Image (cartoon, rainbow, N blue to C red; front, side):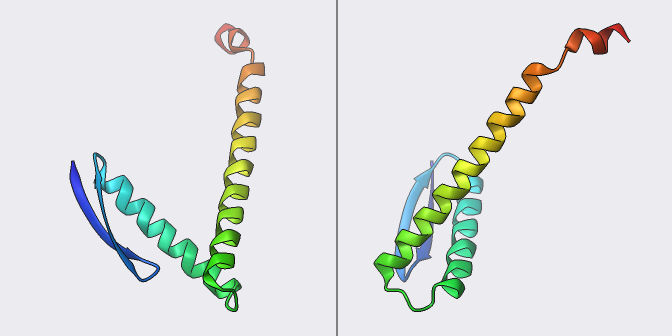
Length: 86
């Protein structure tokens, strides 16, 4: 376990993880996302801002899950035997 320390939304956090590289990437991506969202929602109070962030992240996650399901369905319909026969 490695401890990663970082600041987010003006607060300091310390998190232990088995995968520090992944956590650091997650933190970096989250900071970029929050920075981008803050440009779009400048006048919101923190609660509303975080609500919009969670809604947008959840929407993105659902979109990716739907795309993955479609991709998996396409893979399931591929006739592997026809490729092997060639």
